[in-house]
Every structure is written in structure tokens, then in C-alpha cells.
Amino acid sequence: MKFLRDFNLKDKKVLVRVDFNVPLGDDLEVDSSEDWRIEATLPSIKYLLDQGAKIILLTHLGRPNGQVVENLRLDPVAKRLEELLDRKIIKLDNCCGQEVEDRVSQIKAGEIILLENLRFYPEEKNNDNKFAKQLASYGEIYVNDAFGVAHRAHASLVGIPKYLPSCAGLLLEKEMTVLSNVLDKPKRPLTAIIGGVKISTKIKVIKRFLKEADDVLLGGALANTVLAAKGIAVGRSLIEEGMVEETQKLELTDIKLHLPVDAIASADPSGKRDSRIAPISNTNEKEMILDIGPDTNELFKLIISQSKTIIWNGPMGLIEVDKFVQGSKKIAQAVADNDGYSVVGGGDSIVLIEKMGLFDKIDHISTGGGSMLQFLAGDKLPGIEALK
Ligand code: ADP
Ligand code: MG
Image 1 (cartoon, protein in one colour):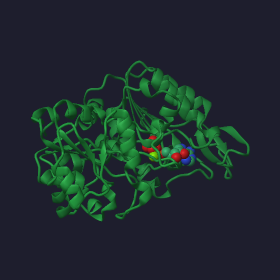
Image 2: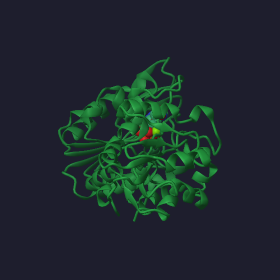
Image 3: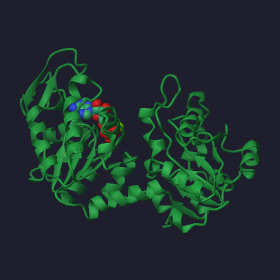
Image 4: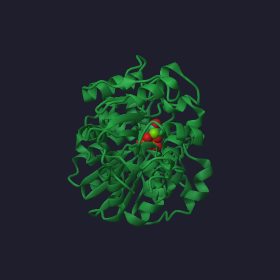
């Protein structure tokens, strides 16, 4: 695989696939607390500017399902990038067509063009060859700096590199290095904290860490499924019924595996009615487990404080409700306070970190959710394979 430093980029038209899939507010603006995906690509963009390249950026935004959705145009993203770089961004309203071809062919060194939302075209997700070839024709070199979508086999990720000399951008390179190091040569003890909803999307990573890590802490709805698999009563808690059998195949008695020992349980997930601290296995049939309890917090905090490397993906409870976000907050604080090396990934976990003002206390915030999980599970990512 090649990297940015392997190319002479001066005066070259460089197509850069980035992941600017940021949430837009009701005012259709990008909030500065939610622009970390854009910020993460600044090193590559600045490097390309320093080298005198002509930059053409490609990204998707949201789920327009292959058609133009006015509210998902990239103008707010261009505006935010302009603010961050203090530099004009030439935002075009299409990805193909005469206007695009004309403007791109006149691009000068130091200029930055942002094409329109790739997912306005069904060809993007369908990995259409003609579409990829068309996009490739705008540039001389292709750079993938979109780790967040590296697990997708879309035209802009796996199609374009068939037609151009290609490499990984600085962000993609950093993600691969950091995540490989966590698996291959972590300072020990290595602790993995996995929460969130779906065990189906995370079971492979849990298995991998039961092999590679020293401790695996499970929380969130995903832990409910594990508790159910162990035959523990979980009341009306959110679980993945269909995954109970698969979960039973995990090494559930492994001493590395730490499950919640108590919970915040309530019959009402809105947080308006009573909740209580319930020992695990004491949840009644009307209640749901909505957060980890204080004893679990202490146990997890102790393990975290003794770790030299920590990787965290997925919250410990129903973080959208104030009453049930406390466990996740305490874990976030403990991870931030740890002096070892910390990695956090997953959209919801990162938003929590950001809201708590702990962003700078984490050594690496991964821009990948699904892609990080696949990478850590040892699966091949199409966007990365395409560069090889
Ligand atoms: P991430 O985006 O960090 O990877 P996930 O998307 O997997 O995390 O999971 C985040 C979601 O999990 C949040 O919406 C949170 O409310 C939910 N969640 C976590 N624990 C519970 C629980 N016990 N009951 C219901 N929802 C939960
Ligand atoms: Mg999520």
C-alpha cells in the first residue's frame, strides 16, 4: 500500500475521498461540537496544500437513497471547512456533468473543490464502474482518507482506485497504525470496554478481545443479551433475542470477561417514573436494565485505572436520558483520567466524550464505528484492500 509521502503531488489533481458525514442541525449548519470528522481530515488537506496539489474532495452525507435531497446538500459542510481552513472552498452542485468537468479541468494549485453529495447518485452505493471511471477522470492521484466508510464497497472507495494511482491519506494511515498497535503490541494490561445496543455487530470483536485483551468489560443493552444468555433474568430489558444462542457459544465463564453486577432498573425508559439500583438477577418482569449500577461502576473503574491500554466502543446505558447516562459518564471520566493509551470509537460514545469536554484527554478518537469494529475483528475492509 502507498501513502501520501510516496507521491510527488506538486501541481497534481488529487481526488480525496473524505468522510464528512456530520450531523446537520435544524438550521442546516454544522455545529462546532460535531465537526470532528471534518477536523480529522485537516492534516491530509493541509499536507496536500503544502505540497502544491490541486484538491478535489469527495464525500457522502446522510442517506439520500440515490436521489437529490435538498437538505443533504454539502453547502453547510463546505462552509464549516472554509472556517476551519480559513480558505475558500469551491463547492459544486453535482458530481458529474459539464459544469463539473469544466471547473475541475481549470483547477489551480492550492484550490479546493468539493463535489456534491456522492449518495445523490445510486451508482455510488451500487459500485457502478462507469460512475467510478467518471470520477477518476477528474484526477491524477486518488487518496482515501475516509476510514469511517472503509468497510463499504462503494464506487468512490473501491471503484476509483482501479483507474488511478492510489494511496491512503494521513487519517486512514493513522487509524490503521493505532488500531493495529492496540492488537499487536499494546502496553499491558489491555482493557476493552464494549457497550451499545447490538451484540450482533460486536460479537466478533468481543471474541477477538477475549483472546487478545487482559480484561473485557461489557455494558449497555449488549450486556443484557449476555446476561440473558447466562440465564439471568433481565425483565423487559432491550436484548437481541436472535443472538442469545450465538452468545452462549462465547467463553462466558472466562475470568477476563466482566459483566455488570448491578444495574439502574426502571419500568419507564423515559426516566419520568421511579428507577432503582438493582443487583443483577434481581430485575423484575416489569423492569428494564437501563444503565450500569454503582458497584459495576466501581469495579469497571478499578480495572480501567490499572490498564495501560484501553479501547472503548459503545455506551453503558440509555445515554439519551439523563437518568441513565451517569454510568457511561463515569466510565468516560475514568478512561480520560487514565495515564495509559486510550482509544474511543463509535458515534454515540464520541458524542458523549465531546459533550463532557474530554475530547483532548483521549489519545485517539477513531472516526470509524462499523469500520473500526471490522478492523479490530480482523476482517478485511474493501476500501483498504482496494489500495493494495
Ligand atoms: P456507538 O455509536 O458508540 O458505537 P451504539 O450505536 O452501539 O454505540 O449504541 C448506542 C446506543 O445504545 C445509545 O442510543 C444508547 O441509548 C443505547 N443503549 C445502551 N445501553 C442501553 C440499554 N441498557 N437500554 C437501551 N438502550 C441502550
Ligand atoms: Mg451508534
